[in-house]
Figure 1 (cartoon, rainbow over the protein chains, first blue to last red):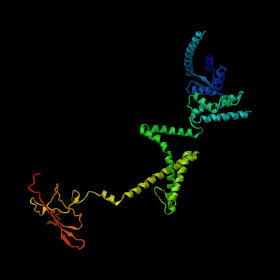
Figure 2: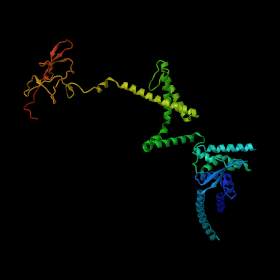
Figure 3: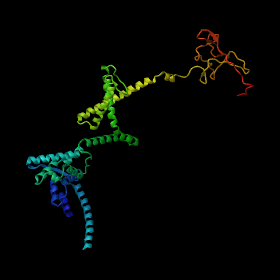
Figure 4: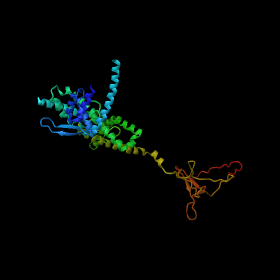
Length: 105
Length: 324
C-alpha cells in the first residue's frame, strides 16, 4: 500500500465534500482497493458522531437523496494531528528501510 | 431487472438490520441511515450479486459496527431470543445496581444474586405443585372429602390422583420453563400465572403455620406456660404443715411464722386433698393461717372417717449448736 496514495485519498475528503459511496470511490481510485465499503460508512458515522464532520442532504432527481459529509474545524484539527502521527511513523519506517537498502547496495 | 435489484437490495438490507437489532435505537438509526442508498449504488454498478462484492450481510454489519466504534453483537446461538434476554437481564442488573448498589456491593448479596438463576428449575417444579394445590382447593366445594391437605393435595377426594396430577403439572411446568413463552401475550400470561401461584404459596405457608399452631396446643405443653408455682414449697416439695421444736427436742405449740418481708408464712394445702386443715380464727373472725402446727385431719376416702394428721418426730443434734 503506497502511503502517498492513502494521504491523497484522506486529503481529498478534506478538500471536497462527499457522500458515502463517493468517498469509497475516491479511496478506490487512490489505490486503496482493500478498504471495505462498510468500513468507510462506519468510519463516516463515527467521525460524524464525534463531531468531526457535518452533514447535509442533497436531493437527487434520478437516484436516492444523498447525504454529503463535510469536514469541520474539529475534523481538520483531527486530520492535522493524524497526519503528523502518520508522517513521523512513515519517516521512521523510511529511515529504517532506507538504511537497510543502503547496506544491501 | 430493476425489480430483482430492488429485491436483492431489500433482502440484503433486512439481513444487515437484523444483525444490528440489538443496538439502541438512536445508534442504529444513525448507523443504517443510508444503508439502502449505499446498496443501490453498489448494485447499480456492473458486477455480481451484492453478497459477492460486499460479503455476507452479517459480515457487513460487523464491519460497519466495528468501524463506527459500536460494540459487536452479543455472541451466542443465532435467533432473537437469547440476546434479548441478555439485554433485559443486564438492564435489570443495572437498575438494581442503581437502586441498591450498596446492598449488592456486599459479597454475600452478590453471591445470592448469582445463585438466583440456579433456583429457577426448583421454582418450575414448585410452580407445578402449587398449581395442583390451587385446583384442589378450588374444587373443594364441589366434592366431598376434598379441601386443603398437606403435603399431598387431594384431588377430587383422592390423594393418588393428587400425586399423579403433581407429577404431570411439574413436568409441564419445567417444559414451559425450558422452552420459554413465545409471544409477548404468552409471556404476559405466564407472568400473571407466576404471580398467582406465588400467592398460593403464601396462603399455603399461612395454612401450614395455623395447623402447626394447633399441633402445639397439647396438654403436656400447657403446664409449661403456667405462671409462678403457688403454695409453700421447700426445694420443690410442697409444705402442708410445719412442726416447730425447741433445742431439747420438745414440740412447740402456737408458733407464728413470718418471712423476711414480715408476711405470714402460709402452708399450702394443694398437695394432699385428703389432708384437711383446721385454720383457727382470731377475735375478728379472720383466719390465722401462719400459726403452727396446724391441726389437720386425714380423710379416709373409703369410709369417710377422719383421723388426726401425721405428727413427725424430731431428733435434735447431739450437743449444743455453734452460733452461725
